[in-house]
Length: 399
Image (cartoon, rainbow, N blue to C red; front, side, top):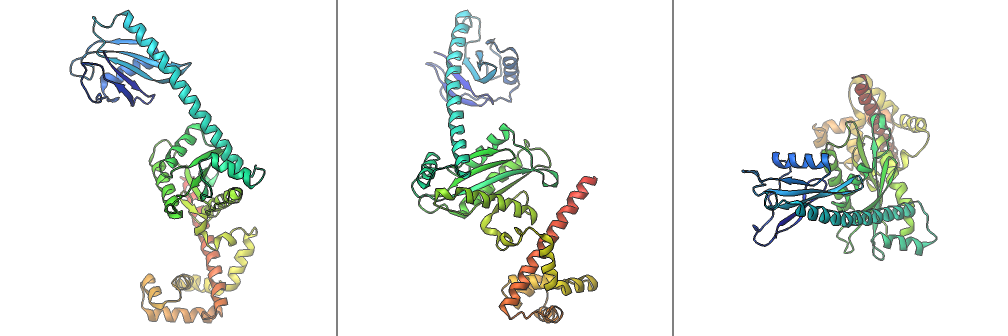
């Protein structure tokens, strides 16, 4: 009995069977070995069974019969019959047997691939139908989530991964990129399923039934997936992968709303300088309200009415009272924490705050004035971030 080795199209060991009298254990298969590389190159070129004689000081110390497993024009893998390459064993009968076995493997692998592809397409169609609102009622929506593997009232989120190139223009995903994205995500978020939509991939991300897998775990999983994807060389230079993650829900009929949230997270995240990152909708805070207002000029005018005097003072005196105010409000009006963040003395912070109140006529002890100041600062910071990103893109274009 001979040792049979089955390789996948990537030349990785899929399985093997050790014949009676053969050495136990896994064959030390190395696609990078020069002998193996030459053999596989010949297989890919000829598309015919090859009789390989024994080659001393290599993995093929006893030779082999090598046969490509093909279905139509597609190579599904490679079949090797180890120890059958010498003149005594490698006769025409062995070649015929190897070709016959390869044909059986080809039919089995083709059926397996077809079943897998059909299953993925069905899941993708279900995802697309669910997030598009194509369901009759709550019961129909729940049936679709059940098809996707969600149990009962299991909570889930919707995520969108979008490809963006220069000047944040989107481009369409190739089928290979879709497969790569889904593989990366499913490796980090258990039970994730997705559907491609031109330049983006829409995903249903289940949360744990026991409550242990909440937003932090799901977002952490997406960040891990995105990190792996960015490290690969298959993505074209200049391509940014930005991911938006929605809020959590247990209601299947809220999927369309969650899709909007995920897309909004990408749009807002891109505008505030978070392109190429995972942007949870929950983390956007007041930006969710501010940056969905259509008239950007109206927002700028509002901010200038509240903090215009500070902006002008900063410009003419080369100071940054606006940043001092921002840090002070973020630190919940704590002089000590503000001084620590700004790396100045608390007396300096006190003086700056007095100057801010004098110039802006804001009362920083009044909650309403604090709210006005905080909103205005967020508008200014978003505008500055957009300006920096535009300048960076212009510099790249000039180069």
